[in-house]
Length: 554
Image (cartoon, rainbow, N blue to C red; front, side, top):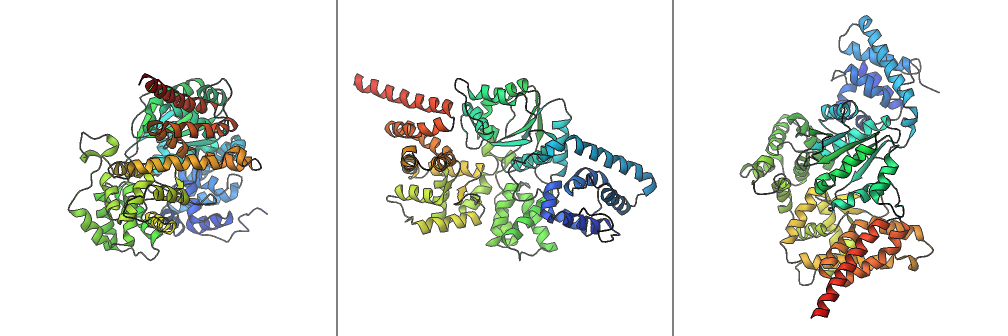
């Protein structure tokens, strides 16, 4: 039975009624915060009547989140209490409030089918902090401005990906086909971007048609928001974005990148570091997530503000430093930062690429706190693409460990992974049957750079290539004819690692490359990756032909 004013407890304040309505639909404070783009602390202050509600935000964000678009009396009462909390006179406000409700209700009816479709976006692990204005600007520029392409630009660690996901979640209901998120962090070749989007949209290749043609045919009649993440690695694919926008009139694209795409249709929005207050809130949020007993006092707040300012209020740097509260006091952390300023953005050497002028020192400080085994394992993760299982990591480091100073047992790997995860250097995905471990993009780059300076670089890459070649052979179709879907899913999960193994073996072991490519032909064919199959097989055959000619000439 639907709730009415008579079935809810009498409420004299906005905060009390907001709490009742939230509980009525079974939302936690965190879940409501994620839906409306607030932090948990902001929702808590609203419910305690410690923060004045914004009438427009209540109408546009809270009413849909609280499922009140078809409950005009409840919606009207919430708006009346919001106006009362602000000290506004109700008679003059009533018509405005009713018009707001009517507009929201009209939009709900108009987009009823769009609301019903499934939200296929990844869920943010924590609510955003301090990004309400950014979210409003993104929505306005994407939906109201003439351009249909918006690029979120900023340094590594500033939170472009999370901001894009939050914005897409807000706008999802406005598109008949919703919003789709395409991660490009594991893509290093611009020629593979079309294939990555095809895979992200769960499309299969059509014989005789390139992924680019397949995409245009599919998207031409789609009303969809496409989010392309980490585009700075594949900026040469910008013409593909231009073509998609030109030939797909209802498509809108949100891009995250460290560099602009330099297209005429491009709008650019700089994602700035957090304000000091929001940065401190984020620092305490992450510190308390690690240790629920972490105390917040005026002295602690002042120290946290000092730390955040020294980190230029970059979210990733704040999260890395907050993780150290498990081992150090805030005074000790400030002391460690006092003598050497972090090498961020404008302070980095001008002869380095832009992506190397940002979080290098912040990452290095976390790296320097690791013991020898943790440092070695962190660097070893730099050879993997798209993450890995603990078993795969163990097999690779054991094979490459000949003569090294760490004995990598399975237990040692698991323990070091736990330590790296605790120190916020490794991300752990527990959605699958077995946990997968991966590095954030910036951390992965740093790990690969450090690995290149270590003697185990080539042995690790060789071990990685051999491991995934042997692993793929054990998943090959003829060996498991009774479980075709399982081995196809297994290979799809490790596709990025298989690509990395192919790239390395093409440079160092052409016979291994040929063996791996031959093993993957059934997978490519059954999953519709015909274009990619031709790409890899062509490269393998070209290398073999060149080597055959060289041997003949010798």
